Image 1 (tube, helix red, strand yellow):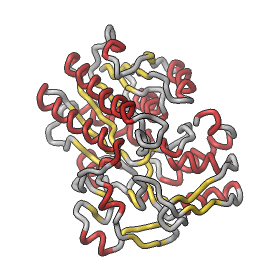
Image 2: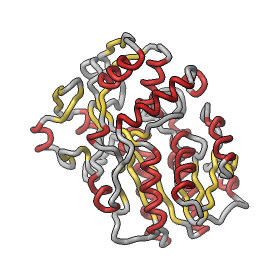
Image 3: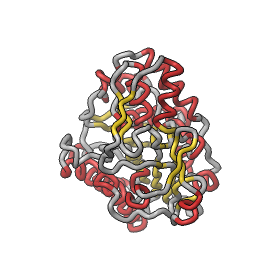
Image 4: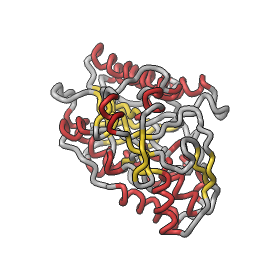
Length: 356
């Protein structure tokens, strides 16, 4: 089996390359990356040392893939991951759409040409913003949690989190809309051309070596910033850091991907799934601060009650469908993820300046 992984020198892409190589040792893995993200070049040597070839190419350009392949599977891990992308002045809306949607279209066309299966890494941010922004929450142990009334009244919201049945109507952000459109196209290409397709809506992926930017992983950003004594803010809502996200280690995602690649076009499995650590992995910024304070001492955090566009108080994915359909469950819990990031932060004291 030959696998092509896009965004291979990003945090998630590189971790998937290495973890899948361990789980599927007979598989040949090739990566492709345009190295536009600062810090991505740092992952190239560790991949090459493991015999993983990385192509320098831009998936938005069909010609960059000419002469390569065929592959049996493409795992699309390339994206601009920021929910503020296209509206924050750091990247244009056109760049966002070209990276996240046009790049996916090019890879789907390549899959059609090769007769390859396709795995799309999507996001929790495809879910509709208004019902999540207006979600009734209460504070418990320094963290927001939906009220019983919210659980009873909100379609697609379960006691375990946001299910696949939650609304995806606009607005979902420009970023969310590019991923939602990519999902639809991937599933349509699969049906039209007989290609096996899996769509995985991931929670916040987190682990050691993640780049030091908030939009690429709040858990790693918060821990590295605290360790380096950089200024931090609780932004929006009550200004106390009660907003909550779940987390998932890429190695646990790789375990699911290995099952999906080996299953091929299994028709008894749902094509689209939430993939996350769920409630047991969920954490508020205030709880993260407590972890950091216990390990590295106190750091004052500024309170800024003015919310940013697209910010949400509580995003936890219900992954019960994935758990039951694939007999899959994360093996690295929240504590293990935070410990791994902390050890890495202590060994790399200037990580944010190197990678952000």
